[in-house]
Length: 305
Image 1: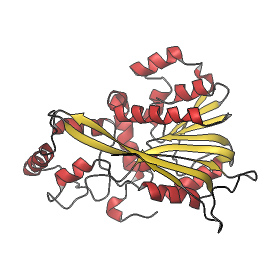
Image 2: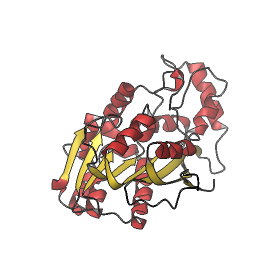
Image 3: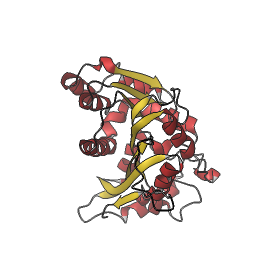
Image 4: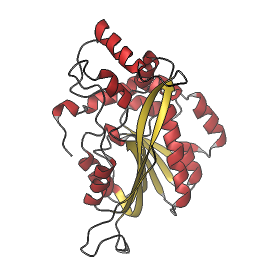
């Protein structure tokens, strides 16, 4: 999947942003925790006893204790490209929630950590039973390369389960900047149907995709952008403005955003959250989800707005 240059998100810039955000990340990552918990609940309906589990883009490690408790016999690996995030995940600089989880969770002895890029996994072929990724795929430059790597390291009958963000994410910011200048102000997000097609294209079986909208609310416009900066999720595209925003431009943006204020006086910020899972092909895989001419069926379950 190739993008116009203005929409490309340089990997080094994203890595630096998340490294800088590590210290304050947990205090602001409300959406990330909520989406993780919703995706984690879906494991109740999946029969899987993995021996190796990798959390791709684990950040400060919120999901690692939960995955370890659900699969106590599995080796859990937390992978992230930002080393400072992994330092928090390892408990070298634990946040309050990590201290709490450490008291409740099983021994972290079976957990390991790896600083690496999802698009270039330093792992052997067919070595993982569950690839788990919460809100990380949207930072990949090349989703074809990403799914190629996931397919390569996933063992037969292994599961890939992920969440990511869709094109309607941060739509209020797009509205606020509409007509203000010619720069990009929101990162590029891939459509759910394109993600499903990519899963099939790279050999995954029985893909299931669905989505929902989650809206956070704020007291004022500066609070919106402050939250995005604290989690490292601000605009990283090549088409962004390179200098500081002028006072007049900022006033226009604030004015436009204020028009979106709700009846309760709060400002919305919407996220289109996409969930997906699929299985690694194996000789025993059924063909019940294929059409007579061999085409794979993708199940889509869009949620109501």
